[in-house]
Amino acid sequence: MLLIGSGPIVIGQACEFDYSGTQAVKALREEGLRLVLVNSNPATIMTDPDLADRTYIEPMTVAVLTKIIERERPDAILPTVGGQTALNLAIELAEAGVLDRFSANLSGRSSGRSRRPRIATCSSRRC
Image (tube, rainbow, N blue to C red; front, side, top):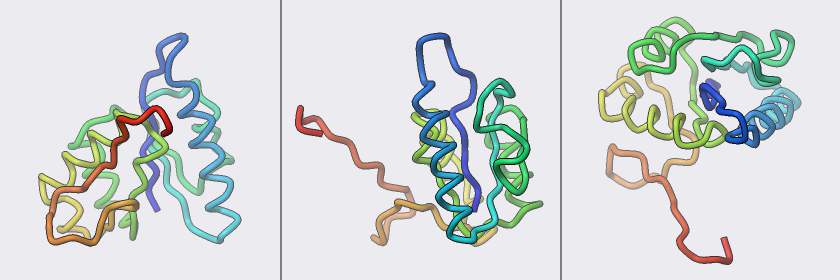
């Protein structure tokens, strides 16, 4: 499984994605999954080299992620712990046909006929 991190963290923003990503990696490793992590920010807990099976500290672009997917061949991609940056990249990867080309499923995607991942949003205060 490939986890897409949140990329650059601005002081006072997005640290929750580093925490949630770290917790996701720990939980998924307990389940026995092989985990590949990509993030452009080396100054995060998530990029600790002992956390995932393989860690890439690279620019967060479709071209770079395509090369990583081609090399690692993950069965699934989990963008939901990386905030808007990861979600946007997942949509771009799907629209570019990268996920289909390498038979990678997008975790959290509905099983509908649409090729574009559906990202749930919530406008209610209860969410």
